[in-house]
Length: 506
Image (tube, rainbow, N blue to C red):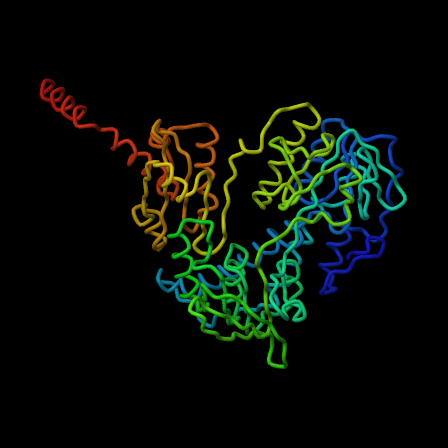
C-alpha cells in the first residue's frame, strides 16, 4: 500500500526519476483548501482523469482531481511512454544488424548500450512529464489533491482531512498488474510492467510470462537489446485476441530474433536460487520442463484498482467483474461515473481518453452517449505491428461478413522497404459497409486510423477506392482493398451490358 503522505522515490534514484517525481507528485505540494462544492471530482490522475479534469475546467467547471501516486498514470510512468522509447531503440538495433544488410547497408561493429537505452527512456519520460504535471493542472484551474481518495457519502470524497463535495464524480483509478496464483511466484518478487523500468541494464537471461501485447513487445525489445529471452504463454498461441495469422507472423519474427517461444505451457511453480528465478512448466501432454532467468517478467493481465475507495459509502454496486456500469458509464450512484480501465473493456490509453470525453458530455451536460458506440482501435507495437478495429476475424466469420485481404507484398512501398508477410483485411456487410479491419505491417498502428474513421463514419468499402493516397505509401493498401470489394459488384449481367455498350460505341 502506498503511503501518500510520504515523499515518493522511484528506483533507480537518478536525476531523471527525481525530475519526473517533481512534476507528477511534487514532494513539497500543498493541497488546496477545498471549494464548498465541485461540479466534478475526479479520483485518479491517469489519462482518463486528466482528460476529464482538464476538459471540464476548460469549460468553466469547478474541478478537483485526487491522485494517490503519480499523475500521468500508467501511460506516462509505466506504459506507453517508457515502453515505446525502449522499442524505438530495440527496433533501431534490429534494423542496423538484421535489416540493413538486406538493403545493401552494412553497419560494422554494432554495439548496443542497454544502460544508455534505459537511461534515455527515463530522460524522455521526465521531459514529457510536465504535460501531465501538477503545476499544469493547477494553472488550468484544477484543484489538485495528492493523497488517498475515498468516498464518505454519496456526494462527497475524503482526502486526508479534507472533504470534497460534488455534483458529479468520476472514478478513473486505472488498473495494476496481477500475479497469477502460481506457488512461489510472489516470493520470487518478479518484475511487472510497473517495475521493469527500474532496471539499469538488460538482464542476460529474461523469462517473460504472458504472450499478450505487453509480453510480446517487451520480449522482442529485450532480445534485441542483448538479453536471451524465453516467452511463456499458457494458451495455444500468442496474441490470442488478434487475428490468428497475426499471431503466427509475430511469433515467426520473435523466433527469428532469437526468442524461445513456449505456447501451451502452464506455469506450475516458481522458485528463486543463486542461479536466478526458475519457472517450472507443464505442457498440454503433461510433460514438465524448467526455464531460468536472471529476471522474471510477469505480463499476465491487469485488474481494476478499486481498493480504499469505500464504494459502499457512496452506494456504488460492484459485481464479479468490478464496478457495475451502464452504457453511459454511470455507476449505480447516478452522480458517479467511471472511465478508463476502471470501466472494464478496452484497457488502452486512447480508450481512456474517449471514455473521459463521453463522461464530460453525459455527466455535465446530460448527454446520452453510449460507450458501445465508440469505435476503438488497438495496436501491438511488435515488429511487425498488429492493429485492429471493429469486429474481429472470428466475429466476421460468425456473422457471414465478406472478407477482403491484400498482402503487403502487393503494395509497392512495402516491397521497396523489404517487408514480408504483412497483410490487411477488411470485413464488409451486405450493404457494403466496413465493419472491421486488421493490419499487420511495420506501420499498422498508423494505418489502422483510416479504417477506424471509415467505420465511425459508416463508409462503404467502395469509398476506399475513391480516396487518393500519395504514391508510394503503404496506405495504398486501403485503395486496393476497396478495389477488391468493387470487383465483386461486377455481376455477370453488368459485364454483358458493358460489352454491349462498348460494342455499340466503337
